[in-house]
Image 1: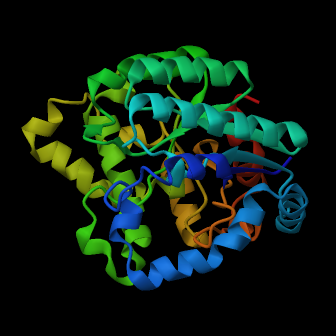
Image 2 (image 1 turned 135 degrees about the vertical axis):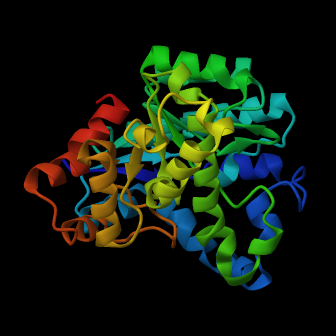
Length: 326
């Protein structure tokens, strides 16, 4: 079974709730995007809305892509950590229930990835338990939570809960925390998001999260951002800088294969590099459907990488089964 581990839906009811509350500075992607790119996003909105939630359209495009099962995550643009906690809990539950309902319409073709009200760790723990009870297989969070980085110890109870439940954690940013320099050239997405993922990798490693929770399944979207492809510099810094070396017993490259990644990097040679670095048992097929920054032919991109049959089988199915607990 060919599994696409990286796709999204959107809960329309959430947009209705936040419409009167959201400000221009609340969502970094919207804050920093250029007027031209913002206009392009508005132009695409009706088509995206259909792809998000029209089941027939979604299934037809899956068949065209050669995908038999999608893991469907909430839209990262609806995480809204800036909201008051009670409202954030409400919309998190709404999104998770929306995902569960979508999966229920074709359970042989979909599994669900939920969201969490991350600004309140206790609430996030409770929603994770509720979501798992409803059948969700993993949870998606941003690469930071307002002013808290992923290494913040106040998030440890959540990591401990996810580790105990055996469910995965998907890291998927939107925009950049301080993205004023990324307005031009659509860098708010093309540069900002893989940079956020690189920062997340550093916090998971040097912040000790992966050492404190050795069985926590963590997946960094978009091929891990920039992290895997410049790992030599991070290893060198760990070697020559004692303030880094004291933080971890091993160099950063030793942690690469502790994480999961997807193939949404758009170049077959980059997929080969990723597999060489971490192994096919840590790489999953991922399209980022239905966004325009997704890979519309993820199977074709993978096949062009020239990997072995065993590696292809792992990437298209076995690794995702491990991460999702299927």
